[in-house]
Image: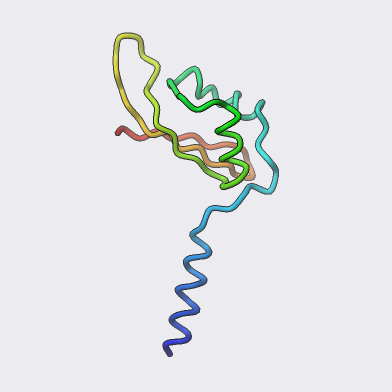
Length: 91
């Protein structure tokens, strides 16, 4: 019984890990999201691409690009088979 539980927990832990996308994300695909227009992000596109192609997802700290306002957000990019998904969450 304990062995079954241990195997189940191990499989569950491995399934929850991020994996690299099947098809590497290109700079062109990243730029189509227009995240560098909508948000102020310190990381370069190359750093973001490296993280996406290694882990399949990346969470960045940034700010919404609204002149005269300061809206800090977390920006989540997820590489899927359909393309990049972008979501933001207030910090």
